[in-house]
Image (tube, rainbow, N blue to C red; front, side):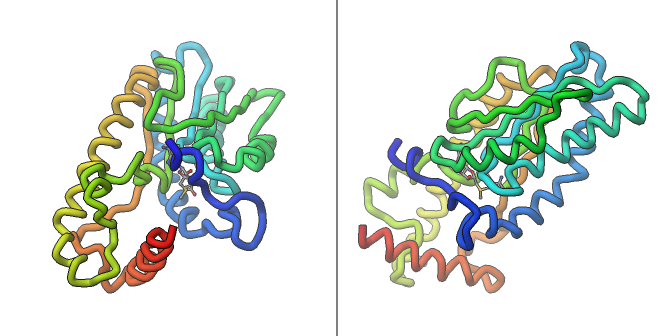
Length: 246
Ligand SMILES: C[S@@+](CC[C@H](N)C(=O)[O-])C[C@H]1O[C@@H](n2cnc3c(N)ncnc32)[C@H](O)[C@@H]1O
């Protein structure tokens, strides 16, 4: 519970803010554009899903800064273009942004002002603080879930490692190599648990035949630090040292 309340990306607009240090994540969001557009076309072509002329789009783990509204903006634009092409009135859309409660929601709300449209086509907006590892939305109420660069955040460190005080990245190289299978296995298992729960929860919240477009980073090799990702080794060492001094 404590980590749920405290962990967040850097607030505000300063030099070290997430808003100014998230171009890597933004590139990932751009790669999702065609997938979101395809999902919108499928949704809008489904007369059952769209029968009430209303649509709910949600981003999970939105953070703050330009990336917070990037995916929902792609979805909105695709929706409006599709109905313009059909020469039909677009649906009323509700855009909801989720993150953990200590996220910079002041900044998120200001970003949402640019997304909101009070005329035709109507777009209403809202923030949904809470964990995506819990229920966030009403049953069968969301048409499209998007999420980028967020779903690999685990709900907690693996219990076995915590009890045995085994760090994720031991500074001692020999200990690290020896424990690698145990550590990697424990994190993989925790991810499996979290992601399975995540899918079960979203399945309840999606409308029938709703869509979900998510992206998360992974690696092909079991080796935590490969030549192309040496930076993670350095970052892990720094974080490990900081954590051992708490
Ligand atoms: C690296 S940021 C990604 C932000 C944005 N989606 C992007 O692509 O730039 C990860 C975000 O996920 C949020 N997050 C992590 N665990 C979460 C959870 N259980 N529920 C909701 N948000 C979570 C974090 O607070 C953080 O803002």
